[in-house]
Image (tube, rainbow, N blue to C red; front, side):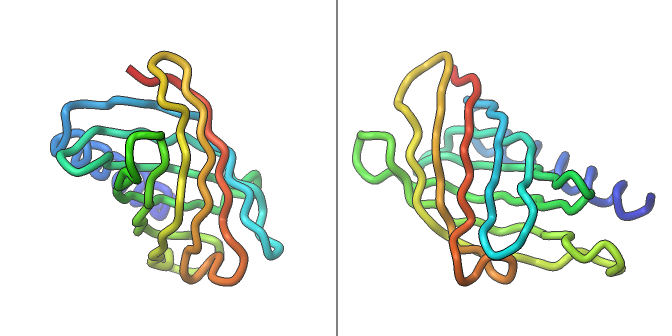
Length: 145
């Protein structure tokens, strides 16, 4: 129970930090992440906040067996078409017998439909140490203002 409390607190601090840097929450999405290489699918929520050089992003993803990923990062725009370079960091708690989660770093590319209201997106990232070889692919759908 102690670990779950730490995970929830870290997620809340991440959301508050990103929201404080930007103009408020700009998008909230339901996320399905499909890591390759034998890892389970992850389900969760992603929030975005506009910052001066792109978007701040925070996600909480959980597998059906309780494995957890908390990630935060920035999306840097590649022109005006909805494509972004993603720089990610966070913690992964895949070994449920471990006392503490593992840190993770990564980067990749994402695309989000440049619309207000309903929004969808797809992202692929290489994340060390959980998905170094094959990419970590995420599908998103949600609301954007």
